[in-house]
Amino acid sequence: DYHPTRALSAHEVEAMDAGAGVHCKYVPGTFIPLANKRNDYLMDRDKQRSGELYSGVDGIAIQDSSLQESMGPIVDRSRENLTGTDRGIVQTRRRLIDAALALAEHGTPPPGLKPEEQKIRSVAIVLPEDQAYAVAAREALKAEPGKPHASV
Image 1 (cartoon, rainbow, N blue to C red):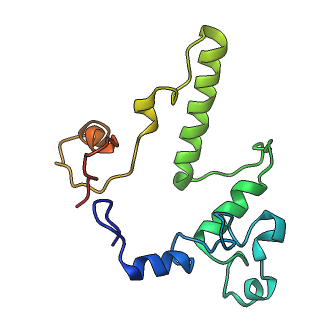
Image 2 (cartoon, rainbow, N blue to C red):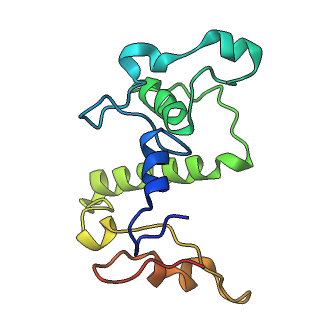
């Protein structure tokens, strides 16, 4: 498994270059995904019909990109049916709306402008049961030069 305090193995680099897991293949000599909006993400309707690829788009990274890039600037949410697994979407929208209102009404700068707010990372840690994640993991979530990544 990848760990930020060691170099990638030859096998890991090969897997990344091959588009394995969350990675994708790139146009040679660039960081442009080979499957992209211009070529309809190389969607394969035959593989979609056969069930080999549910979306017809190969790879997690490109499936995500195809949705993110094709949403358009305005989304009609009036008929949207979000579930419990969409809580992150709901929370993000609420934070964006609150930040926009605070800026418009009070001139409050939106979050993310301070350098310390821009260096946040995911962590894998085990916390005591009696401690809230937001409090107990706060320091581990901060990315600082020279500070090792928190991982179990």
